[in-house]
Amino acid sequence: MAGGVFSLAKGGTVEKIDKYARKGQQAIADLIGQGEEIKYANELSRQQFPNEEEDGRGDALRHLLWQGAVQQGQGTVPAVLSGYGHELGLNMSDPATEMDLANNALGRQLGEETKTREELLERAMDAINTGKAKTLGKKRK
Image (tube, rainbow, N blue to C red; front, side):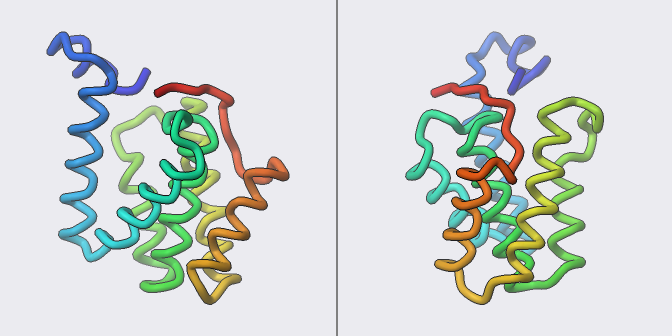
């Protein structure tokens, strides 16, 4: 469940907690020089799959584009560190975490194989449409 115990403890909705979590992620990304990559990934994933932001195709696309863009612009080490860092503190055997880590790795591969954001988006969408990208099939607004 997105939001987890924090959401339950505060009595907030998962959507409200996720909104604040995303703002926190953006602030951290800005600090480490990946803010533009996160904005790019968030915007395009919402446009392409507006109702599948959690564990669905939108979530997969966000991770593919984020890690691919960091790979293109900053290289492997920053991409790997931020990709794993994003999942720190989570249960690494949880299906949602495994999904994110798999899509991060695929995103870095796509970033290495492409030169432009347009080409990255095209390859990422192909990975989603052909089942190469991992999703859990959940949909949520």
